[in-house]
Length: 287
Length: 266
Image 1 (tube, rainbow over the protein chains, first blue to last red):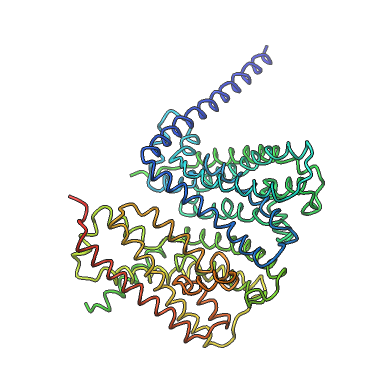
Image 2: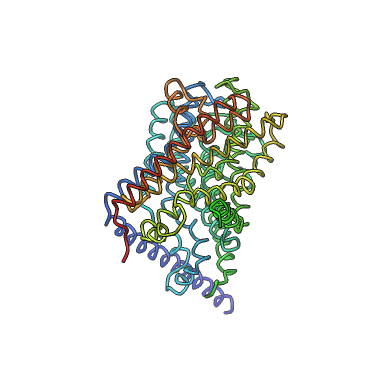
């Protein structure tokens, strides 16, 4: 009897949790739709800021092009292969940045006390913070990443197999998941250190900059760090090694190329826990 | 109070204001160090593939990376100095109060920005540079005179950087919203200062052009003085020329703005 009761409780708990997730997604969708409507009120401004976003994010690739105007290979990778890595990480990071990139503003909300407003609203705080000031202009980065990836696919003669074809979308979505986890964890950190928001940039923007270059360029310890500590290597380095048939960094076994979905789920779970801990520790600045 | 003392006080205020945010400074130091770490390996690979690229050897290229991280916030190459605040004052109309003050608008902001730059040189620049010097093979001069020349070049770079950003800020008199201009300034700053890649690595005519633009006074000029790649007097003359030209242009634009533009507000 007691067991049945427990089981019923667990099911009820799962249903409540599922309900929370659905509620959160609904709140997120509504807030995002509001920001998009507000953005579209100034159409010219939207077009110009999107172009600006495109140009600013393209600058990294201009640096790579300038480098390849003087050399034929970087760390043993040709331009097309570097473009492949670049396009994949830019696309993944761009999706994460578009979806929840505004979370980096959380420190400001904690400082000026406007986070309190979000706490009293009947919607999950994470959804509200993630959708806050949703910037559609960030499509600029996604477009830029997609174009570079298309260029890479045309230039690099990849020997396509069903496995590789399947891995492409899986890699992009998992990569976006891993970057989302980094954004959420960084936001959770801001509850503790409000002024130190810039630390997050080292992992978000720094992370995607790192992944634009081949793993062969970097020191072994650094590669180890972004494989086992902050698992950014699963965004593109490891799966791309499989697609490009390149030696794996750190001599890892071949199956790790298919690990990104599991890594992304684990990262998101850990980031979720960090977010909860951060939100629990929040004390309003008061007035 | 003599006007010299007034601007010294404003500069000291700028220094103290930025020195207040210790956690933010520590976070900035950390981020600059991480970016330096990433860039240094890409540069090492680049110079591995092509030794003596642009006339630098590998140690000089590594030094350039850490110098860039040390000077990024000092010279506000990606923005982040006084200009956002001044643009906001122009947009809201508070600028009218500033114009009534018995102090020169341009010199006031120059003094405040030099104070900020000096703090960020010490607070944000020294640690990443020291990190680079300890963990990577870098090329530094032994003579004190070379270091003195480097500091003069950095000071001139601060003034050129201010001159450019003052023009960016004044554009708000006509445009109200400075987002677009700020973005353009960011792009030009990164591309033309050497922050993206040392300007001597740029190919052909593109290299010639970017090396003649004012932005090359910002990172490339102090770096070349420190690395012994450029003579100090010639570099100083180039930087000072751009500094004066930009400050004069700033004055011109300022007088046009204050004469012809109706200030916002009630």
